[in-house]
Length: 348
Image: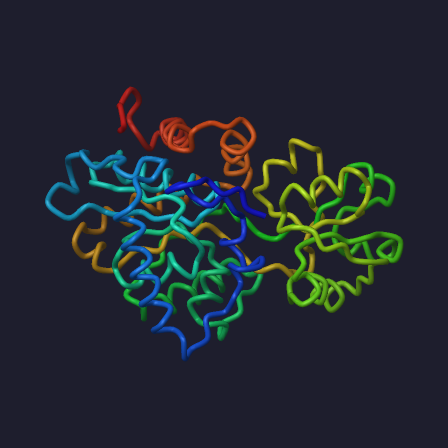
């Protein structure tokens, strides 16, 4: 499930954004302090040992509105989309004169969110549902409601010294997917349509799927689906895609911003009954950083979120993950196309 860059490179994985599997490991309350302490030590060692490949010193020399204060450190999880999002939000801040340092691929949520809460980093582009469940230690399960999940997250993180920015319309949520041929053969448009044909189809997904409330148990409970069998594969990775296209499975769990979906002409079935939780991209920011840099900090982040949709994020992911382009360059191109960064400006 992971393509590991050697040395100080980042671990490329899709599991940190939702808990498939390691990213969804709950941190139990008695261990919370231990986790925070371990994360602090690990983060300090990492920052001292490595120069991030996506521009750790990126934008450090930008002068302007942020000149009077400390550098704003933007961190990301250890999978390509999160790295790209850090470049997008960090680049937006830099374009408006804030001094920014981007630290990409820091690790899983168990490392990055405690580092944010302890003040080691100041901004993390998060995923609303996963952040709510993780930070609440599982006490506040997210729902499919964008507004309710966002409000709950905003209230929750305020007690952790954080401010939640405006949620983007972009969501990287669980998606139940079939091939175009399967959709046409069985006239499938929504997950509910699977009820009449599920007994003839094999479902493929992460090995933990049979025990996860948003996977097989949720599909049975919410939609009454009973598949002929289940094949344990990976978390929306190449094994799942290969099995789906080869016909070894008929239905798969992928993620909504996966660039393979349009590239391979796959069909995402509508979650008409709201099983999957909202996973809108939401920047979480240290309250101390907002106080230091002023309201302009949140204004920039919220403006970026307002322009970022699921389809556009999927297209940006394709440039990074399929075409192999540098995420920093992809982020800069998008910011300029959106009028959020001056054209012709050279970023480090």
